Length: 81
Image 1 (cartoon, rainbow, N blue to C red):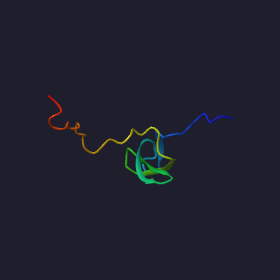
Image 2: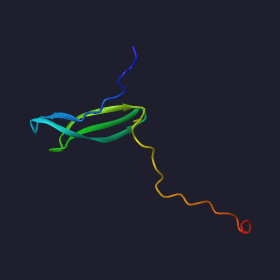
Image 3: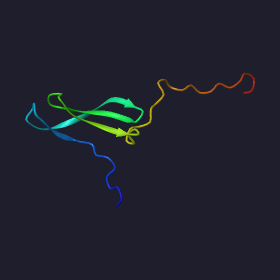
Image 4: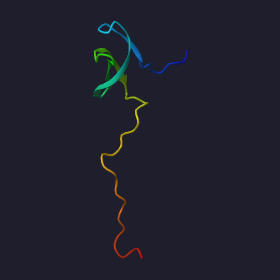
């Protein structure tokens, strides 16, 4: 049988403090050699509602951008115009 579902991400979880299902925000806690550890936080009260481990990095995450813009390469003097 093929794997139909690659990974699930929770959009709502039950919050015991708010006493109802609340939308959650996913926060990256740790980047480990084996994967990433994420925490689910209630958007109502900020309570931690669960954790999720993603093995091998998240495919949905965009590639990292350089910290500063790259400068165009300079041409050697005398070669241009």
